Image (cartoon, rainbow, N blue to C red; front, top):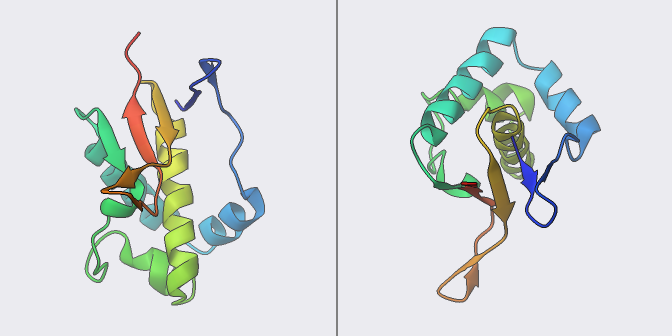
Length: 120
């Protein structure tokens, strides 16, 4: 689950819900489920993940390829946004608790959200 780090309350809304629904609707259940499984495997057993570092630069031949080819109709920018929302939903649906934020690396803003496990 995703927590508001200030209140420690769960965040249940999906940002940009219309975009999420449109992109999700273009994928088969099998494609979407494979993406969610891969994302959950990535988060399992870790304490920190940054969304923009998860998929790598070449999605072809990976479970993430349908985001680019099918969900976002080969639009690179939309694919990045879609992937970010899919990560959000995967984390939101987890049993363990995660916070998130925007951070910098060597004073350069990281493009994706960084998620961190909340231990309490």
